Length: 365
Image (cartoon, rainbow, N blue to C red):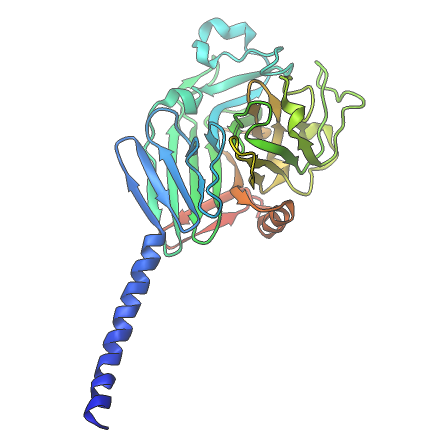
């Protein structure tokens, strides 16, 4: 071996070490989190997102889920946003004992005809004011965890049920995976949690979207909760023009578990985005509920914006028990892609994560 070959022989391991360090550094930069007093910022190779610590909290903050492939952002008030613990029935007999923000008024155009009431509150997103989300960084993902113990309860109920949320942002994906869970301190025949899924849609005559996709059948319902003849709509797309005028949540495009013999195969709610200035078509922003059987009711109605409320649970529960749902929220290029990703993760209602990894779970197994 001559001197030149010997020099290369010695330098090669050093070069490989340097390249390895540089590659490792590049991978690390693809997954990062930082925080300030008011927010936690998440960045992957595919997404940016902000989780608020103060103000309007829970889920991913409005307009912050950036799709790095297309430059698109969510057009509403946030994604996977959380409200009260509720059940069917009226609060009219004890409204004078509730703070105004826990009174649930129905028989109107924004809540519909169905009688429901808050068991524990307040509405977390608007009234909690401050949460303490924290990030966990794994080898190929960043997870965010946060929780809140409800401090108020309706007469006859205890306060202290705990809501917890986990959001996982995997490397290489244009979506995040999440779960919302309630650990209950009360008994109820049909306790449910109300959330926004994926989120509401701000628009002016369809300025920010061209169509909505619902993967499940819907009805309009009368004041007694019965499906209105002729209002059934099969799974498929709904043109933006259907949302030019306000309508009540139970007037059309409403799903109620008790109106159907079995759950749908998939529970997907998606918005086909478009640039409000140029009109250029964008990706689909979708929310998947991975176990359709957990959905109690789901609205898709117009009230100055498109309101995508989802309620999950709605089954008997005892103190010390829990219920949850698991979701995928993010960007997709087609309905076919949504179906493929959905089917690969279907059947789960929970999620666990630590620095070693994350996985979807099923409480029935």
